[in-house]
Amino acid sequence: MVQLRDLFESSSFWARGRSCADLRRMLAGSQAAVTAWNGPQLVGFGRATSDGIYRAVLWDVVVTQEQQGLGLGRRVVEALLEAPALSTSERVYLMTTNSSGFYERLGFRSVESQRLMQLDNSNGSGSTK
Ligand SMILES: CC(C)(COP(=O)(O)OP(=O)(O)OC[C@H]1O[C@@H](n2cnc3c(N)ncnc32)[C@H](O)[C@@H]1OP(=O)(O)O)[C@@H](O)C(=O)NCCC(=O)NCCS
Image (cartoon, rainbow, N blue to C red; front, side, top):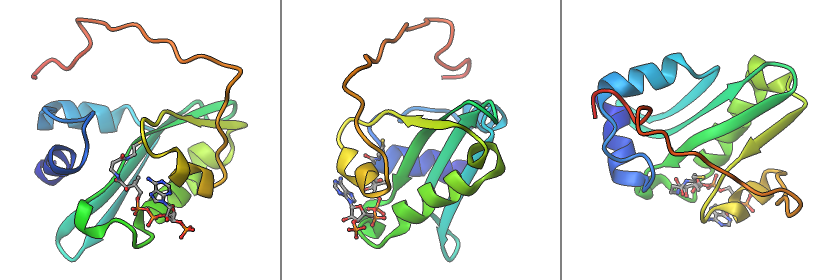
């Protein structure tokens, strides 16, 4: 769990400051998770939530800066899409700030007809943060 926390700290901008206890809860609430390793070092991660039939969402896809551009991100996403909880899902969504080109290469398309909406829940930001 420490390695996952450190990967998020070093290579993401949205998943910093997450505690190991909260990351454990996050994984327990995910239907698929994929890790990529360079020897003993965790260098890539991705996870997904899914109802197993209609809708799934990819979350937290990340590769360390040193390992980017080598095809690891593609392999992480492809492995997630092949996981049982996702391969049976009618549609897979994701949110991205600056990596839409990466996901387009993997077959995703931008959706202009829908708007992302969110509700920030002050009780839901992680109990141990
Ligand atoms: C986005 C990220 C996961 C991609 O992983 P990666 O291992 O570098 O990507 P890959 O080497 O597997 O690239 C697969 C393809 O996407 C392309 N690609 C990668 N990043 C891209 C980007 N930001 N924009 C456009 N294309 C991109 C590659 O050129 C490659 O193209 P090809 O199939 O024609 O060879 C990685 O750069 C990363 O972790 N970035 C920081 C965190 C982040 O922003 N994550 C996304 C959260 S939504």
